[in-house]
Length: 251
Image 1 (cartoon, one colour):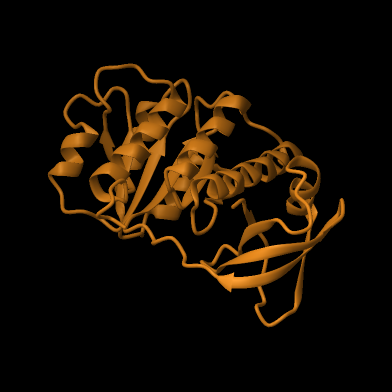
Image 2 (spheres, helix red, strand yellow):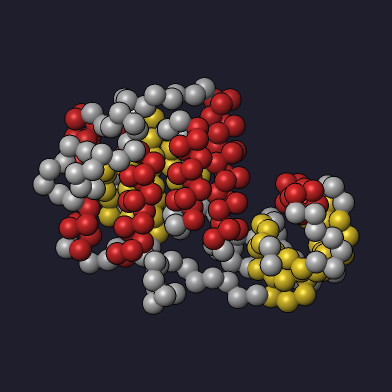
């Protein structure tokens, strides 16, 4: 059954009204009709099977039939901090990282970030990324979408994590002594990880030094030169493989 997010589910109510983009998606994109069944999720873990009673362009009425079990929570909380990329690359990264189960995606701009949008453009981008994260959550059957944080400067990003007692990594293409695989396998599994990935032009030496002072360990992904979005997705996949839920046993 198709899955849809709504703001709140109240089992005690007879009919439940779905409005906004989800109603439009049901009515005009999927062309669902009376008698079809869907799954409703509220982003907190609640989910119900529902029967469509009526379909209009801006509103879909459903009856809640039964509660459904929630997917298991991941043992690992991942916050992915990503320097702004070109629109298509950033959209792709948000979708794939969300599929892989990151809890947060925190966009930032640094010394070599090519894109530094104004307030209006930033708001539009955040809105789009949140829609992409929600779509990815439905597709991958997540409990809730990844949280997309506000756009920060690199300094603001580091300050946010300075006092946090979590595992912190920053990918750096010039790191020659530490690779991420060895770091993960030489340490006991963590419950929360923060990973920073830079822009197309990489980080400056001053930024790496500042990250180190904030408690971040610089790590390499090997000898290949990866695009920024590829590096971010690889980082998340490795974290989930080693410490997260990319296994049946983890569920």
